[in-house]
Amino acid sequence: MADLKYKPVSHDHEAFLKNARKREGFRKAYDDLEEKYRLIQEMLLARSKSGLTQEAVATLMGTTKSAVSRLESAGKHAPSIITLKKYAKAVGCNLEIKLVPAKAYPTKCSNGSPKKRASR
Image (cartoon, rainbow, N blue to C red; front, top):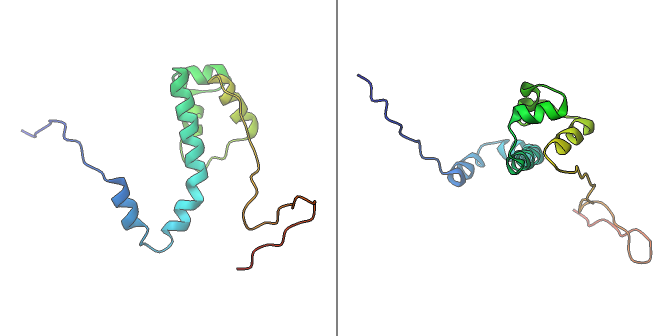
């Protein structure tokens, strides 16, 4: 008879990333997904703090549990701002979106004139 005792598989995420970064194209792909995963992590944390299930959030949003599941996953779906606002409200949060200047773009000096970009 098969041994059905639970045996968790150990996983060293840092070691995994160290090895994966050696593969061609991994860093770009990983960096491209960083913001998406950060948003999902924020959403899951907010729902956890609210003590709500996906089903409860779906009811509050006027949608289905499967729609909330897709929203909280890292698939190809890009949620609209309206959907994110509904989700935020359902879990007792406000949605805050801001644009942060990138280092490569000029910023304004104290006298109002643009700074020159750093050369590459």
